[in-house]
Length: 65
Length: 407
Image (tube, rainbow over all chains, first blue to last red; front, side, top):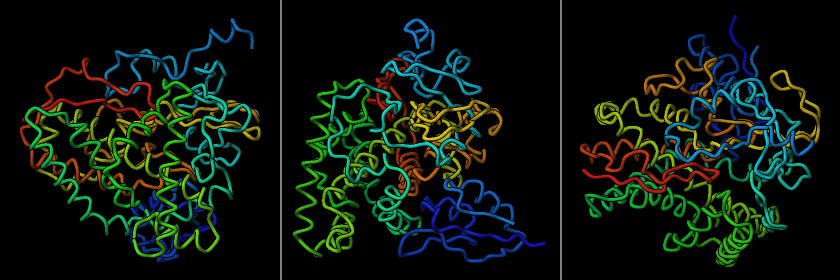
């Protein structure tokens, strides 16, 4: 089953760790620098990096299920 | 706690003038401090819980039950401060919590996001070229800290903020005082005020100038002050924070990184021959050197269990980034410097909502500075022995006072 990603922009602190780790999946909003999701169900080959991005998020703004 | 019991507790941060600059804690200090959460005595004679393991530091810094507001009663200060020493605290969001912190930080997140830092890489490259020209013209021999490591990030942050670099002697000296734990309290109070007054005049000029200039402080003046979202005093506080954080940290990382790379000429040569590994190298330098070595102080605002220890509301804690970054549970052979390890879990920028907002800028400056240094100065070597290098041992941001080099 494909990984599903959710981001919480209220928690996001704009550190950019997710963009550094998995740029195919995460972006930062030009207006406020907060997280934007490119895919909610990213392809399996980036799964490991998406998990790492969730782990590295300092604000705990990325959740996976 | 009775005075006798207090003096039985180990002092944090430990005073050790003979430690190698590349080693945050020596073996004896590691035995004393590293492990489950322990009680320590601070230089103010207050006590605090010392949190040293990677998982515990992450949990602590991400937990909403800890405050970064050092004006709260019981906050674990690492130095004695004169009453009112920190003056007007408005805008200083590094010491705020919750919504108050988020409101100010979010006015800056777009400025420092990765794609914007990529846009300013040409400016960083130009500044690296220029400061390396200055290094070339100054020697050999020359002091790498005063000719390269400090001017580079100082010029970059001045350009981004719109602060005249010509005033660098003034603000560099005051920045150093603010983060020096040994600075006399009265001097801290005076230098904070002088720095605020200086930036207040600058910000007021930018507000009055309207939209004629395009730098970060002018943009905030136009987009946030003019619209009533931000007070001038808050913008001044943000400017103080960004100016200090923008050059002290990167400057000290460049100095220590150069020392580390030159101790093993093969590593320095690898940087020149394999610049594609520079991103990984920078992460490992951040992990290994961790320049905020005294740790991040926090005050518990509720009862929280960290690393098996119940920390009660009102108690102070110190999150030690340097030991978390050498935690064997996360990093294999943590005392070894390995430029090919994947060190992304390093916590040198902190963790939680206060994690360094300028980290994309810091990474880009470090990468470009070190790659270009190795390319242009392949025969660079340090002329002083390690034990003779002056260090910023009493600073909240550790680093070298100077690094004499020749080539």
